[in-house]
Image (cartoon, rainbow, N blue to C red; front, side, top):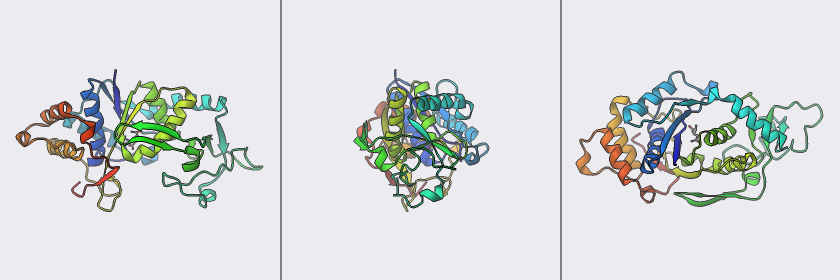
Amino acid sequence: MYVGRFAPSPTGPLHFGSLVAALGSWLDARAAHGRWLVRIEDLDAAREQPGAARQILSVLEACGLHWDGEVVFQSRRRELYGAALARLSALRATYPCGCTRKEMADSAPAINGSRVYPGTCRGGLADGRMARAVRVRTVAEPVAFEDRLFGRLAQSVEREVGDFVLWRADALFAYQLAVVVDDAAQGVTDVVRGADLIDSTARQIHLQRLLGLPQPRYLHLPVAASAAGEKLSKQTGARSIDAAQARPAIARALAFLGHPPPAQLVDAAARELLSWGMLNWEIAKIPRERSIAYPAA
Ligand code: GLU
């Protein structure tokens, strides 16, 4: 049975970019007669905007993007992440790291915009060093996977990212660990999300393999970007979706995903647009691009 999910971080209200991810994962799940879950990724309280989770859920509802079961909040699931981290540590797959951000500033730039971790603490903490974070050991051999839109992709996590953080210096479980634990715990079979996360996928598969968890299928969708090529976000001034504007927002998001609604649906309600989208959903129609400028959003 297909199980999909939408996993927003409540760092701001739902905007056009996040609506595209929500709609794409909803359509893919419903077209497969599957379940669709919503998970609020609220581990980083400092980045959370009060009220954002509630706003996101109410806009999803106003759009007719109804979810199955209870909404899951990562902030209430920390024991699960702790147990996974303990398992990885028992496997000797992790090590404490005492490096500061400043010390890594000279390392090679990594695919995710940070720095490739040069492995300084891999062989043990140097004398007098305090453990700040916990990293997972990676391997040079590329992790390959088949993306349903982009085809076969491969990444050497060791070379392109380096041993990455699972427990952060600010005492939080890292996104990469939490997402892998939750996707498996919730029985997610299909991850459909923005292509800004495509370069995280190899890291997540690496963790799934270490933890003996099943690997879901992946479909990455183009992300809406500003004319300057930045992903739309609160920081780039993306406008939030107003619950009263659900219908035009759904129509624009369908068109963005290569499924423009036909002319006879100009007056159709959001619900009818969604039914049409579900019946006409085809991966081959989605533009095969990681990001598309969307100045109107
Ligand atoms: N919470 C992540 C975000 O909002 C998405 C996680 C995922 O879909 O894997 O960017």
